Length: 89
Image (cartoon, rainbow, N blue to C red; front, top):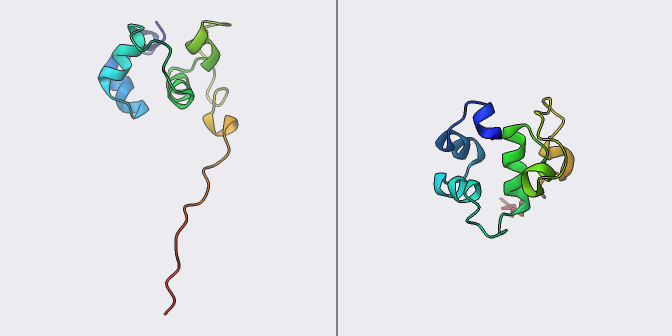
């Protein structure tokens, strides 16, 4: 299992990914019935240093990727700036 190769327990992985431990448990136990969001898969793949495609579908290699090979920032553009109102003085 990719998590165990990095000596991470479910609690540590969930903390690093910003997810609940129960969410990580449910994903690992395949209790999510395919309802795992793309961003969740990408976050987990980045932390686990595996391909998101392998993590989600088992396609390709489970070999550990080098840092930067699986960067979420390369996949998604930066978030849009928040709409803040300027207060005139």
